[in-house]
Image 1 (cartoon, helix red, strand yellow):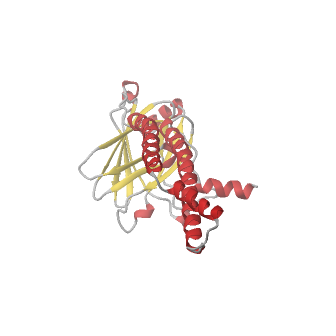
Image 2 (tube, rainbow, N blue to C red):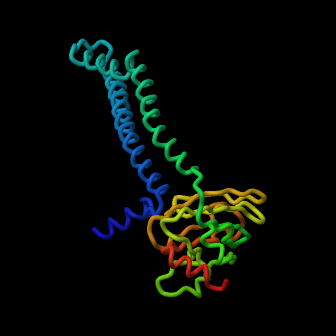
Image 3 (cartoon, rainbow, N blue to C red):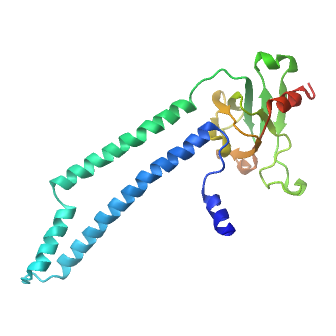
Length: 257
């Protein structure tokens, strides 16, 4: 049972930590219900077509068996006809309307702009990330700004319990239950700042500032990676976000400032 549960988790979504990721998972489950209905309906029609073709192929033309001929006529009515074409057009249109409403709501919430308390700037380089805590709210002005580079921890330097190719020497520390703005850009080539648990995936484009908003609901450590083919060391640009309470975040901001 534990093996089956672990295998299922490997093909499912990671645990959500933001309302956006929760919305993505809910939308996926919502759409998957209709996909299942469509699969059942299309499979049924396909089976009817196969049976119809099979019976037409093997029933002799001069056979006067009324039962078999009526069966073939019934099968033809199931896979052909004006009524079927109308249904085949109207039902998908209704399904698309049902799906598009929650998806538009989620897209709007992902682009919603809220006055941030903390602003984090993520800059992609070949092949590491650098971060700047700038433009903070008035509550954090007295603590100054933080800037640091974040490199992947080499396999030989990993400690017991750490994840290979996912650990970094300097983690991002962010407060929970706080509106956070993340500005993403790149210094050289295209990169992508991606953290699945937070439901974020934003391209880092040189010369362009992209922004996203976070509201982390629970404490924890969340892992991500660069999701753009940015070069030979593309797979060695991990991202680690450590979500802590607001008090711990303020204490961390006070260190080395």
